[in-house]
Image (tube, rainbow, N blue to C red; front, side, top):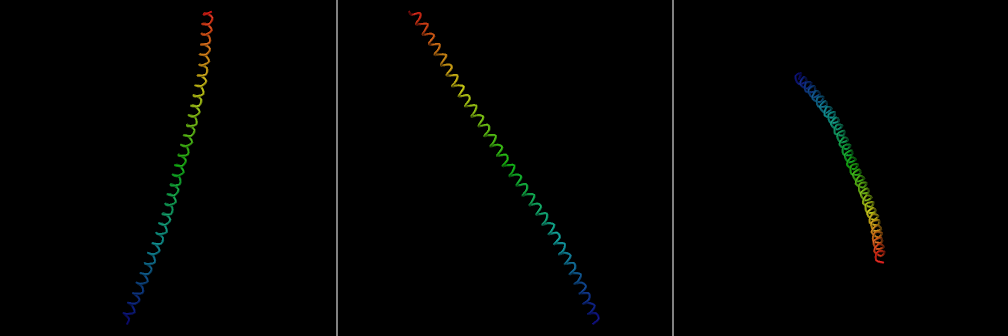
Amino acid sequence: MAATTTTRKTDNGQSQDTQRQFENVQDQARQQYAVTQELTANSLRTWNQMVAAGADYAFDSVLRNWNYTKSLRDASEQALEETVQRQRETTAQMLEVWQGYSNSVADTLSKTGK
């Protein structure tokens, strides 16, 4: 009987040690899981911020490009309008000059023909 009691104590001691080791392993696993969870959450936050920054940059670039293109188009339209207006003015002036010249030639011819 004495041997049986000693064996039980040893079994209890071993099972208690095994239980403590198991609890330690569980605690370590929980701690590692918590650390991993925190790292994953930080990584996801960082990726979200990078995506948001990338989208902001892309939209900013598109908006700047659109504004630049609109400004360039407006300037081109204004330059074209000014060119057409100057061409009209030049054509009108040239017509006046030719009318004056033809009137002058007609006057000269009519004076010499008398």
